Image 1: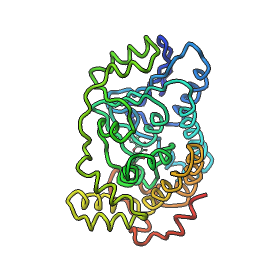
Image 2 (image 1 turned 180 degrees about the vertical axis):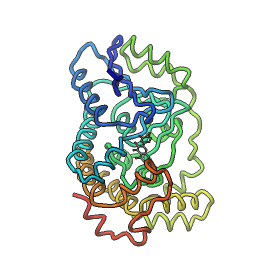
Image 3 (image 1 turned 60 degrees about the vertical axis):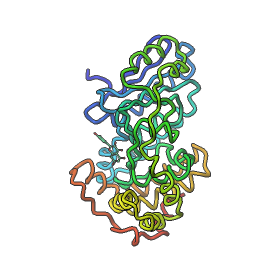
Length: 336
Ligand code: QUE
């Protein structure tokens, strides 16, 4: 038998989960999602499990996201049911983690994007190392911030959430603690001892004993500009505010935004605005509704995944091509 893609074990007072598709940076496929649901169901009411410890195999990634290559293939084949099942089950796991009545300890030591963030953000503690690299890169593949992050991002300080969601900015481990995505900063060299203490004691508070001094956020110099520009009510308004700012950093943000799917940028900003008023389940329902139109009925998702993950040419052909050509009513029509 081949190795499971989610290795589930009982160790000491912990239930441990190891995401185990290292060649795919532990990207979540349907089998892993079902195994997560099984773990939640098995351990929720098991008094011998005091907490859960979640890690990624391979030393490079926690989890790179969802298996969007498979989702794209289903969309290309016109298969709606498996796509619906994938996102329904993935978002149910996100909600199940949020409602899980025990500490859900994520040890994030490497790449963690999109769907990976959804496995960590809704519970805690969330531990990041100096090798953690987190991002919400969905606008590059014409998706949108999902897995419940649409509920979380508008609640970050200032306009950090809109900045992260639209540009896909890469955050260091320390950045994540500063913005609230993570709760504890621990050096990689301390992880084995932390893990052993969690398993032995079943007490999530031991994390405090392993934290290292927190470096300054890499975005410190840009906080003012982020809040000023990314709080604009439209994506074009954000672009114009960045152009008016004119700094090297601001113009680099404009260049990044101009490479992303224009439709996806508008959908993502509108989603954050709506989800700011929704609880987690309400946000997940809005996301689930959006997947239908975005994955199947709009060409950009197929094209984005083709360009980033299939052909890797980095040259997507978006339609419409520019932000100026996006029809605001077409964006609204994708929502519930
Ligand atoms: C946006 C995304 C994803 C992405 C890149 C983006 C995503 C995802 C992966 C990914 C990365 C490496 C793999 C893999 C998938 O990349 O969701 O199988 O080996 O899973 O720009 O949303």
